[in-house]
Length: 212
Image 1 (cartoon, one colour):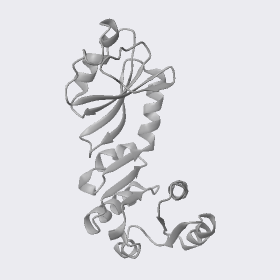
Image 2 (cartoon, rainbow, N blue to C red):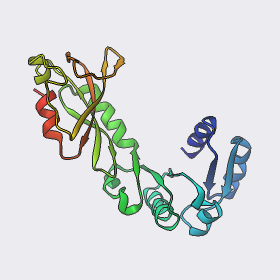
Image 3 (tube, one colour):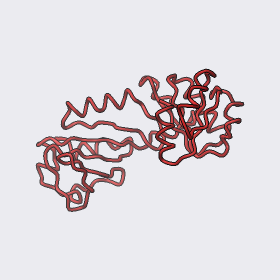
Image 4 (cartoon, rainbow, N blue to C red):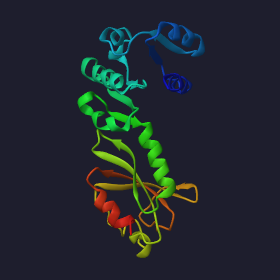
């Protein structure tokens, strides 16, 4: 995971430092990752993060295969070094509740939850699918695939006529595999994939508009 992320970020012209706690692996990675500063260090230790000059970085990604390690890295990065943005990988979805601002996590990425959402998307029409939590869990990126019974379709309502509250915003609509920018005059059709950002307590407003 760390290797793939590092290569992608270097390709996007970022300065990247990768911490690998096994010395032999770190030595191999130095030749495999041109342009990446590979350090043989334990990212769960304060001294290692200090040696990586964390006080001058923009983003830390805690992407180990161990949730406890990712939480420790996130907490140290935020509390001890004041890193502006910390992104953490969740390996076990049962631990998702821990990955919040208390542990220094700004954005959490749960591979199990993402795969589950993709499965739900494939089989569920007319249900709210949670894609990602944002703003320390206060906001959610969600998707609804519209059934023919959706109120927006039955009433032939435009986005403006739906009168969605300020806690809900439609950010994109995917129709026949084509992304569309929503406009106030947009009408909805069956099988539209509606992508919304909503406050975590705004599920009722989404249901009232898009679920029959």
